[in-house]
Image (cartoon, rainbow, N blue to C red; front, side):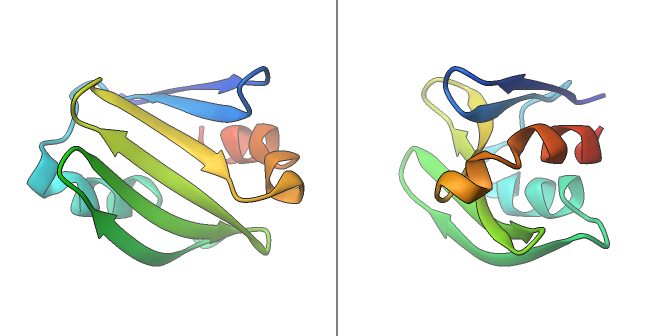
Length: 94
């Protein structure tokens, strides 16, 4: 089970999966995690240590991030309007 925690101070959603995905599986894991009628996936970018899946929710763009080094997964908004929807997105994803 994946737990979500909205962090108002840092303007992000902390994602705590029961088991972290492997680097090569993050795109598939993220696509399955975000699979929903209200969410559309835009693009995927992979780096040496950080992977990012950009998606839209409520006409705003967000990023699902995975950093292998720190073993962290989080969602952040792109812009103030998206940041204002993080609490709603947390509720929607749970």
